[in-house]
Amino acid sequence: MESTSHRPDPAASTVSWPPVAKPGEPGSFLPGQQPEPASTACGHDAEAAFVEPTAPDGTDLIPDTEATEGADLLAQLRAQIAKFVILPSEQALDAATLWVAATHLQCSWQHAPRLAVVGPAKRCGKSRLLDVLAETVHQPMLTVNSSPAAIFRSISEEPPTLLVDEADTIFGSPKAAEKNEEMRGLLNAGHQRDRYVLRVVGNDHTPRQFPTFAMAAIAGIGDLPDTIMDRSIVIRMRRRAEGERVAPYRTQRDRPALHVIRDKIARWTAPLADQALHLEPSMPVEDRAADTWEPLVIIADLAGGPWPRMARQACKRMVDAEAQTEEDNPGGARILADIRRIFHAAGEPDSIATDQLLFNLNGDPEAPWAETSRGGLTPRGLGAMLREFGISSGNVRMPDGTQRKGYLRNKFLDAWRRYCPTVHPVNATAAGSRG
Image (cartoon, rainbow, N blue to C red):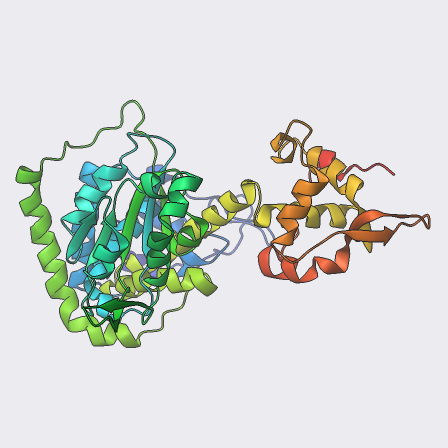
């Protein structure tokens, strides 16, 4: 935790900065020159003179605020999580800490963020993180192979915190996902308040509404369904590298200390419910990402100290990382972004022939399209991807007056505006074309 108690030497306040330039005298500089950073060998005064560069997104510019009791409690919780689990980044550790604290104020939130704890293989620490969460969140309800009916019947207006382990057995294959479509619907609906499941109960089959709103942590190998990932704070776990060490977790031994910090956080948050309900914090992201991260940022603002800055840094960087991951994966918005780059490199023509588009897509060595089949992405495969966005091919007129099968640029405009508003530089290979 960074200290916020440093104060500059009072004597230093009488020194003008930058000093007036005197040629040949050390410590001065001429107009237009930049002073060299002071050597850190000079002690804390030289260190104070160095200004840490800020992030382009501005999150580093957020000043620390007055710390409350909550700031220290969050620091204690953060240390407890880090004791048993190595998370992929400091931002992921901050996010997990804030998510746990947010479970204790679920009555105040409009949206119940999911925590997607995913990894590419076994032994990445996913279940261990859920072990720690189970002892620190509000009213944990661990579900393994539980039916959706049992889960929504366990959710009340005072919701528990769902902890779903081994989610790959639920969503890991098309057959399993189809079988568990009701579970996916439950997890999607429960992200927002006042989304109910309607079922008939009793011998007279009386219709009854069951609430679904509850925060949930979901762990599994591989990504969860897109609709759940889109409602989640995503933590991508990885195996510990050689030399990375964590304390072994023993339930009987370690649970009491985790319960102590859990109970302290519950007592701290309890009187803040109404204040949390009415806060509208500034957010570094928009739309559903803002809805999902807002409870964590509100917790950080209530705690004060460095947490408002740390929460927004974690939010911005983790949301951006997921956007990049989505772009790097085949399908979805990635195909739109790559086609937009091809149109841009070609000078924004009114249309492009299908075979020319496929030549560029399959010719990009950093794109996944050449690997979609033995001969690369096909006209049929491209058409299937674009139909999801309401885009179809047709006869288009080429600059030489001939007609060929292709795509009109104006058919992409709405999808580009919604899914990839920024044009990134196109790969040199993919920019090539054939007439």
